[in-house]
Length: 164
View (cartoon, rainbow, N blue to C red):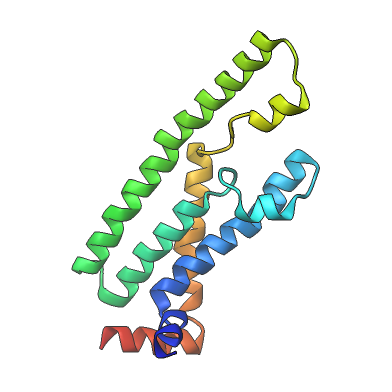
């Protein structure tokens, strides 16, 4: 039971989770208005879109680590490198996967010359990666969240405990 309490009172973990959730929540507005339909489950738990929740979460970990341990610390360095890898993946590899899925889906429709219900179910997911703007928006969310959380007295105590 103590481990669960420690998990949910850990400032760095909560920064990441709240950063991720905040980015996913913002997708209700950015994706919902663009698609003119509100599939809350897909918006909150789907991948891709504006802003990048992966970028928000890892940036929140990096910023929170810097706040707790200082920008000169090993913890901040590790969180920063981890953030760079995830952000690069979101903009690079995953973005290319999205482009390839769109092309493959179009080829399948063109070759079969019909988009039956069965074919729609087999389509590859196209919204996987992020544009640079989506990633930078996620990073902005990830920077803001740890600074907002440290204003909450509960998390001030958590930061003090993490610092030792």
